[in-house]
Length: 392
Ligand SMILES: Nc1nc2c(ncn2[C@@H]2O[C@H](COP(=O)(O)OP(=O)(O)OP(=O)(O)O)[C@@H](O)[C@H]2O)c(=O)[nH]1
Ligand SMILES: [Mg+2]
Image 1 (cartoon, helix red, strand yellow):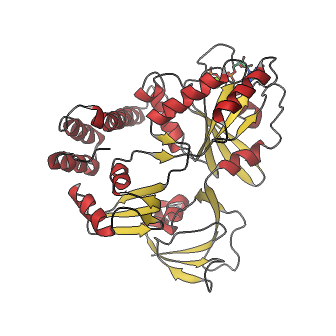
Image 2 (cartoon, rainbow, N blue to C red; image 1 turned 135 degrees about the vertical axis):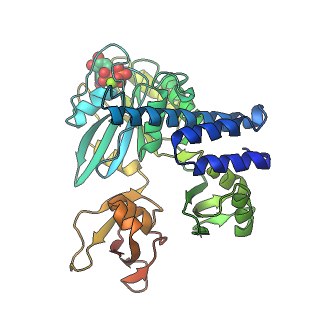
Image 3 (cartoon, rainbow, N blue to C red; image 1 turned 180 degrees about the horizontal axis):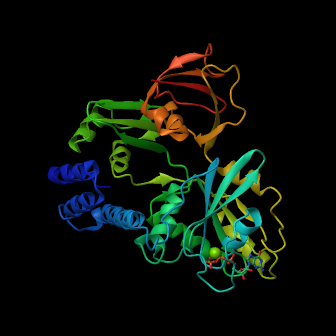
């Protein structure tokens, strides 16, 4: 981790995050990269910044295309719709499109030759009263994490998702495929195992000051140390949310928006194939209890009976109900949001107006001594809570 960055580099990084135009951001990030030495210790940071630059370049291209209305290139990721978004990730030909067309009404193309799907492709999967948005990411391959082929699209999609379905083909060395997926995710800093610390730093407008929401524990530092660290990067206005057990290093890493945690399960496809049973045994040995494996066949539909519950069950989400101020009952349909979300997160999810014009909220919750209670935007919600938002 980039401890010991020279102060002028830290300052430059902060300038980059504050820059509004992507062109300007890119310039500052490039300058930032030239300000620290090239060695093993800064390798990850360098890779992270490079990915950030490619994403910004993509953003510029997309904006241009929108303006001119010509040649809309492939999307980088699919905007979230429905209750949760699950990205189907895997090497080519494992059956990602077949799954999408089995579970959703998507008209995606299925072929027995490689690399058919070339952009993130969505479909809606109904499970009980939930709408799970499945997104097929273009095939993952060796080097995707360094931006090769559709690497940027595939891994940006994974980053944006609420959860991942890692898909392998049981008829063709599934262990090798699983290890490839794991390696590329690791390189892209997408964790499939819940880390001890979960940190979010949300930069705020000037004058908002630093606010800390510590839901867990600080291991080797105090809030004062955190303030000092953030200020050394020029961050003076932000809300910092800490869950789990965090060290000062973890917080520094979060400044670079490095790691994200995305829960995952393995969909082991083509269980109908004669060689599949052997492949499944080998895969189980390697994966152990690290991740749930579900053996399925898109061809015969076997193993799909509980897929809705399996997919929803792996997500790290909760359901929160909303109520309109002058109505007696809350809406029957809850919002599904990531665990640990605050009232502000919920407000943003409903509409940016609710966030921008927020004044206060009332919350009904089993864990409160009395309900409703008047609370602020940083109140952390829990599964089953009901919220009434008040705006100016
Ligand atoms: N035997 C068998 N074949 C399957 C199964 N699922 C998919 N296939 C076949 O595998 C091939 C690839 O399927 P796709 O769904 O296009 O695979 P994909 O992962 O989307 O591949 P790309 O988008 O090209 O990277 C096709 O010939 C499918 O008919 C299955 O459960 N069993
Ligand atoms: Mg496909």
